[in-house]
Length: 366
Image (cartoon, rainbow, N blue to C red):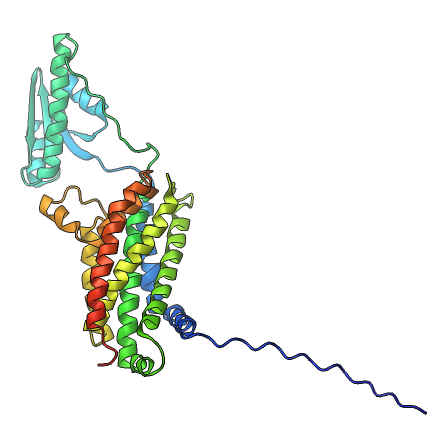
């Protein structure tokens, strides 16, 4: 009797994985640390999205409040004010009651028509609304005077907005709030990471290990750039939902390279903050002190066209102002690559200067 021995073929050994490079290992560690930090996720994504959602819902109707105006009497001027649609009229019985409401602040002004006499009284304490009411009433009275002469007007005014009539406030909010969110992620991410790693002696160990400084910096920068791209996708994705109605116009994708340049600029600010601060609390406070005022002065939440001239001039020194303006140009105003030339040059110059200073003052250990 012959016994045949059967043997299983030897298993082929799985190919060994190549050892992770320091850059890949550091990038992976920093990305995991970002994802696992709930506070960072909240301030990077949820808090800016809350602002976008609240403002988007408030202004989703595209309607603005009209200035109230008290009216007394009847006549063609009162009728023309009603037909203008620019004011919300409140009818009152007599001039005495109207003047009392203006004096108490319930109304910014009132108009009384008795025959051919038009009387306008306004509250000097509210210069903005009083000025708007005076301009509207003055225009209506002038048109009524021209109509009374029976002669055609000598000059005509052709007024129209230059943007698409379908533009909604959300189309101005998304680029602005996105700029603010990118600045928060880049500044806080760089500053807190370097301060924390310095306090925990991680940077010192990396310095002693065969890891070059630019490997550490570039790995953290890669995480910041990836987060910025993710923020762009999330904010634009939510903005185009029907409830908000964001409509991208022109070459909107040109905003992406500008967004990456803006991330570089804010990352260099975060390096500066991380170099000077010794604790996470100090770094968080300084980062807030930089990003929040810069957001208001850069027109992130509302236009600063009505701000004083010197304040608008100062805002030109902020990278967030140029990032917001550049993204507005290509995402909303339908402009092309030429509109990004100045914002891109400013962001590159800001990154070079701030990055050079940060490199000089950077410390591996306390």
